[in-house]
Image (cartoon, rainbow, N blue to C red; front, top):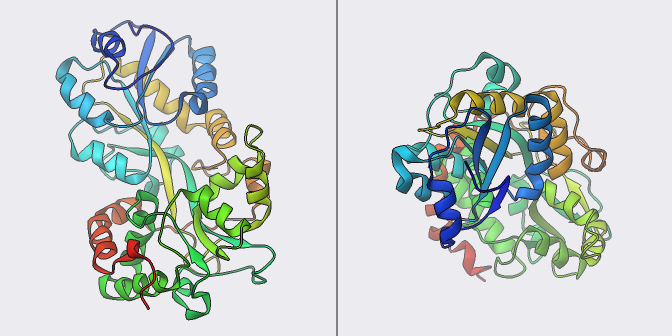
Length: 347
């Protein structure tokens, strides 16, 4: 068994390694390897244990999750992988640490474009790659991704690193919609509209808008909820209050979304319990808890986001299959380097 209900550690922590490499075959537990912070998923796991009596054990890693499972091999105690971003889900599949699962309950709950065609991963919540816009300096209330390259935004646009997975996902979706050549032109245009070299995280872009360093920025929708409710760092509430959320392409194909998701580990020693957990996570109660906890959108059709998320407005998600976006990520990364995106505007 795992040493405790919630075990926070990294590859460098010997005690955690010893605890989690021991065989885990008890009928009453399920072992989760997670890139998501334990406090974000604990309410879900508490609800699962209350309903089923199955103990849910968590190993949190901020990096190296796939490499750890590979190193553990056939004796890995991992049953379920929880992570964010399509890149990490496809990384796990490509590394051979997942196994396909064909499950009528899960497939009914999760739309096809939010799951792997081969059943190796499933989306649980979505987050929009939206535009943060200054309430004070940006009068318009709708926008397209294509418009971000318009020279009217020259010196008024800011983002985090172009190679960050959140941006690569969006750029990959642009390749899927417009092709590589047009996306290169677009990337060049938004690069030249940057107010400064890309840096920081999405919250830092909201901070930059608050400070007047730029008027618009790319950011994930859920960060706005996290900032608005941040009691430990109340200045973040000011950053969030200075911006409005614009959902790009709301009048045509919809806003690019990425996912948090789950996968069944290749050598899951508690496979039956793992499947029960995955079924639970795709269903109504868990979808509601998860979406409210992380300020994201549930993938279950008809499930409602939190009131905070509703306050941003209505999102129309781009229905482009995430597997198609994942297939374009390498090209997107190459284009970021080709146009010198991270060098900032080039006059």
